[in-house]
Length: 463
Image (cartoon, rainbow, N blue to C red; front, side, top):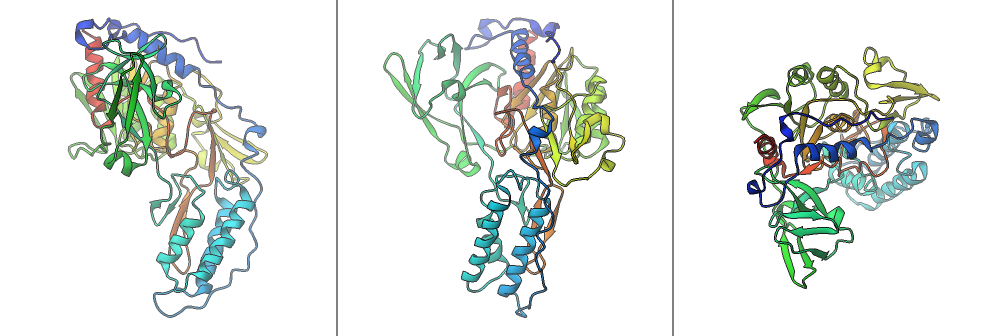
């Protein structure tokens, strides 16, 4: 049972005056009440055999007779060598790939293996480049952002396309422009509530913008357009701004702490060092602070948990749980942090993040900045934030690197192709997370100016 939500009662509750914005603004108290309710409503799936057994099964070796193959004596691969590497790869996937059962198990993977062997026979000349493409083609059904071939993801994420030409406001029966033109429909959009996102302008104003999604190249080079139809019979076509990737600031360390307009901000590029979690002790003393994860590519999950322990003095649970798909892994790797992240061995799988659902009290305001580079352990941090009162996530949907982990890589014997994948499956609340799409923010904003927008939001509400 989640705790009763308390509202942050500090100077931030001040009402924004209508003269400060073109769109009527809520108070911070109203914003946090709405966001807290949304976060508290997320219900963790039961950590039970019924929940995870459909995704994991006992999978021993395929017992293939993997005999060394003859070499062609040059840069090309013989058919025997290519077949050996294919069989070696699929044998490894069968034994240890975390999403093997999620993607159909033996039936699907064996069909893919046989097709890959056939493609090798039909390829004519064979080398590592040809084999790499054959492998990628036959594993295209995998949508796992941690799955890589020679360091390259085989899946693509979905990037936000922000339509910022017009700021809309939410009204009782839909959405309207500030001058009162009511949106009747938008071509290609069946659900206006899914299209219009609660957003934040660079000046720190809360508005509603249409946001759609596309692969990175389209979002960057060929952003989409929308035609909006109003109840007065008029129509308007608007185009999304080209997606802009956020760039690293060379003046910042991988983990850094600084201030902007009097607001302390922790910047973190990775979740790798103790510095990541130690800075939480400083932010925990502040009424308002910012955690900038917009470029954070992940790292050690236990440090994400440790950060919250340092910030609040309490353990914060996740809304998901994960299962290692290799039976009898045991808990040796979790010694000393088992209570922090929740570890359980059940029939005989090792489960982590098994703490009961909870909504943790927090009297301060913590803003978390996210972008498409926010991935893996940084996304674990974001998910935990949604179990903490008075957190506000601002920016873009995250990278979506969380259904699986990255436990290592396998270098194929003859082609030397390196395939990386994990040995875990993660189970989320229904409709809460999609691989490649990630977690949604509470306030949508291009990551390139999310920090500026967040600081302006705080200062507007403190006037």
